[in-house]
Amino acid sequence: MFRPFTAALALVLMTAPMASAAPSTNPADMPAGSYVVDKSHSSLIARVKHVGLSAYTVRFTGFDATYSYDPKSPAASKVEATIQASSLDTADAKADAKFAEAFLDAKANPTIRFVSTSITPGAGNTGTMTGDLTFRGVTKPVTLDVTYDGYTSGITGQRSGFSARGAIKRSDFGSTFLLNPPLAMVSDEVELILEVEFVKQ
Image 1 (tube, one colour):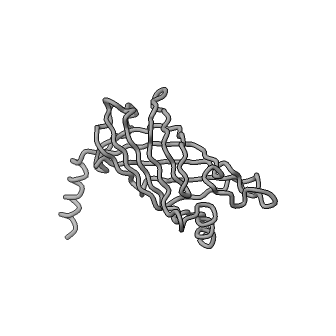
Image 2 (cartoon, helix red, strand yellow):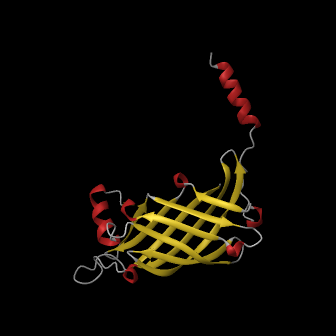
Image 3 (cartoon, one colour):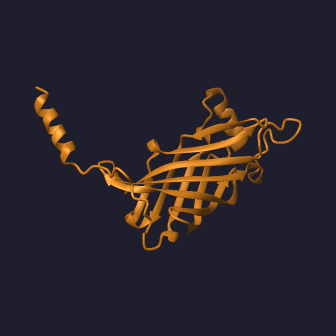
């Protein structure tokens, strides 16, 4: 009784436009429009040095991001992102709420926000993006090194991907927990690592 269904499914999969095997890394191939982050295929990671030894890694699980794009004017693209400070994930449930409050002041400032102010294309598919980061109620400019990983279209939709790296000093935003002697255990510099996919709306 499952044969008709199986045959129909196979026919749909065979005739549906499949995603490109190799995404195009030419920004001109990405259609104009608005894109929204695919949270199930994206990660926002922060790393700090712990007692000068390990790169202690946390991940944020609650976030949203959008960007608008026009291939005729890529530098005019606009990126906006919000992160829920309480969504900090250390892989230790007992530590998550404590660290979100101690480092991020999550109750008083539940949302971390980034709004791009300029995008500068670089060599190949790289560039930089500068924007205003609001964290613990303080807003400071931050610059990220961005790699455009490509665009593809198929059964998973019109989809683009980016990798970004950057760093901030948490003390610039008033985060000093475990920063100063005699309990200087966590570095001031925070490494930011973003791997994100977006889907065209």
